[in-house]
Image (tube, rainbow, N blue to C red):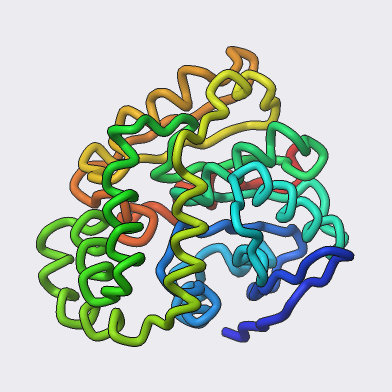
Length: 271
C-alpha cells in the first residue's frame, strides 16, 4: 500500500501527516500520546488500518511541529481544525484514540462543520487527578530522560501482560533512541491531559458517535467510555461498545476493532 508523508503549513505552524487509501471519502485519525512521533510508524499504521483503505482516503495527523511552552487539548483541537481547513477537508469521518480522542471530541464540539461522524477509542472526556497519576509518572521518567523505563512503563500500562512481555525487550531497545528534544516534546504533550474536561460540552455534539473502550484499560479505565456515552445528548445517535482483555491499546489489538469502525463510518454518503 502506498503511504504518502507530507506536511501542512498554516500562517502559524506546520503539522506533519501521512495519507493512504483509495476511497473518495476522507477519514481522519488522531493518534494518542506517544513517546516518539507516529510519523515514523506510518507504514505500520497503514498496514493495521488497511481494512479502511478501500472506502476512505485516510489522513493520520501528528501534533504541530514546534510546540508552545504549554499546549492544551483545546489548542491541539484548534490546530487540527486549522490543518483540516488548510487541506480543504470538511465533513470528515474522525477517529481519535486516547489523547487523540480528547482532541477529536473537542474538535467535534467546537467545529461541527468538520465532523460528519465521530469515533472515540480508549479515551476520556474528563481526567481526574487519580487517572492522571500514570501519565504523571511518565512525565517523571521523561524528565529524568530515562527512555528505556518510560517505554517499558508505557507498554506495561497500555498492553495486556502477555503482549507486554512479548515486546518488553523491543520497547526497552526503542527507549534508548529517545532524544532530549523528544523527551521535552513528550512532557509538553503529556501535561495537556492534566485536568482536561469537556464533559459538560459533550451535549453539543450532534453527529453520530461511536465510543469504544476496554474493560481492562489500565490507563483511563472503562468507566471513562461509559461516562462519554452518558453525557452525550439523547438526540445524538450513539453506539457504546466495551471489549475485554485488550487493555488501553484495544485500538491496536482487538481483532474486530477496524470492522467496527468501518461498519460505523459506512455508508459514507449517509446524511
